[in-house]
Length: 80
Image 1: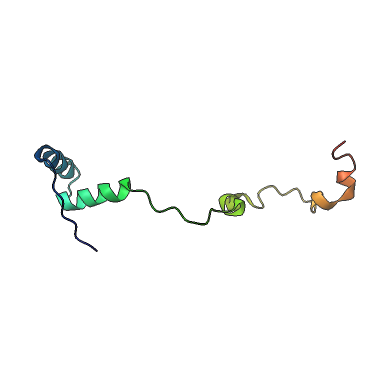
Image 2: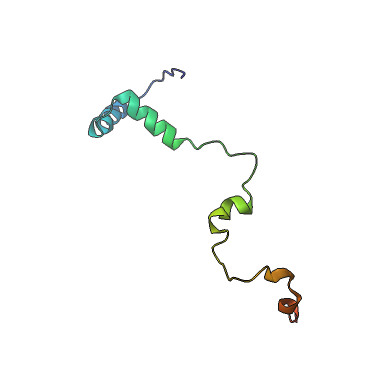
């Protein structure tokens, strides 16, 4: 872990101390928590696939029938 030193206005330090005390944390622990939560995590260069986003939905609609998308009986009036 890297140590970071920074200068803050006295009024802000007072607010920081009050907020930390209210949460029963040290100034350092509270400041670290706030910074970690406020800076977004880096965005992955690879976007999630549709399967990744809907994996919890796969297999949820069981009709008992086989793949209807390739059965010609169910495609007879498709696009009509």
